[in-house]
Amino acid sequence: MKLVFIHGWSVTSTATYGNMPSILQKVAPKSLDLEVENIYLGEYISFSDEVTLHDIARAFESARLEKLQDQKFACVTHSTGAVVVRLWLDLFFKNNLRTSPLSHLVMLAPANHGSALAILGKSRVGRLKAWVDGVEAGVKVLEWLQLGSEEQWELNSSWLEYTYTKETFFPFVLSGEKIDEKFYDFINSYLVEKGSDGVVRLAATNLNYKKLKLVQNINKESNPLELEGPIRSSAPCPFEIVPNASHSGEDYGIMQSAKKSSPAIRSILKCLEVSTNKQYKSMITKSVGEFVMFIFNIKDNYGNKVEDYDMLLLAGDEYLPSQLPKNFYVDKQKNNKSKNLVYYLNCKKLRKVKNKKLGIKIVPRPDKGFVHYKSAEFKCNSLDDFLVGNQSVMIEVVLQRVIDRNTFVLDEVGGDVVEFGDRGVNNSKGQL
Image (spheres, rainbow, N blue to C red):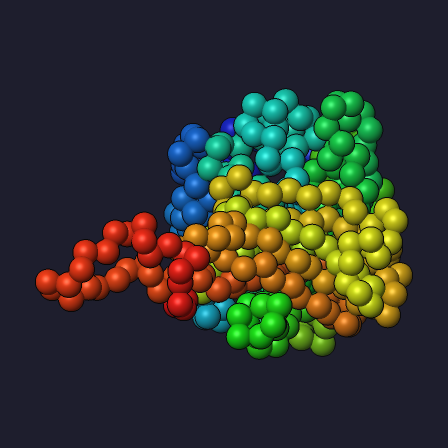
């Protein structure tokens, strides 16, 4: 088996993976016949601020063709490297995984749903040793990695259509939740955030996730949000929490601290030995964890992004914010470009909500005028569909854009001239 390690972002040696490549080659069973190949993406693309992750994924295709031609290979990635390979698959082999040369994708601490640290910006992230030693990320890459980015939403929406049951492609996620406090800068609390490895949340690494769509019905009293279609789930993917592993570093880093006896080494080899659907399915376990991530993408029925809004979480029989349990809230980020909203919540606490009733209220703006929106609520009476530990839930919300009939009026030629101001909103006889 040819095993590829991907390097990029100013990396010119295998230092970012420590001794992991050589250890794997030494301890792998003879049946795997591992042959390690290192691909340095820096040889194929310049990592400037203008370069996007799509550019990097295309550079990986150039590297693959030059280094491997059409040989089958397995791949080990770390952090953003997983996103590069997933984008590469989506660009070149979407809906046709049988033709892909990639057999196994082992993702170590992948940023599949982004990182809370990315919002800090290039200068701050570059100073955080916990991010990845020897790695620099340009502005466009960090924009992709920000929680709730539009590009993230598109890739993860696309991957909902993937299946891994044809014995041709086996993805795996391995991540830790150890906090290496020597990386803590006493300013940024994300570096010691519970349910994360100091850089990426477990809920953001996991390739098991859900997506649902809520559509506002303005023909009903209170203009409720209603579930449209089924709740979609990604194809089941093995997910393992590696004990005592942090994102990076020589002491606990999931890569750099690897030794022959390391749990990460054993788990990677176990992944690479999978060759049948039965073996793959046997590695899929029920996700158990303390935290969940909700990602809200809000637009109107014409496809316009709704950027200005407030959101309230509701609970209990009366669906009130005051009925929410204590200490359920951990963090909230609003993406500065997409305006998507990401909540990070304690799902163990939320399961204590009375009668398992949870909801949201969205107060959008403008809320009056010729074109405006109406507030909307969604009331759920079954938390079990949403609260899965260490997973993300993508929620698409469609609000109805209300256009006053008097926004555009045609008068008869020769008729009385009507000033625009005389047709104020308060005189409206209807809405579109």
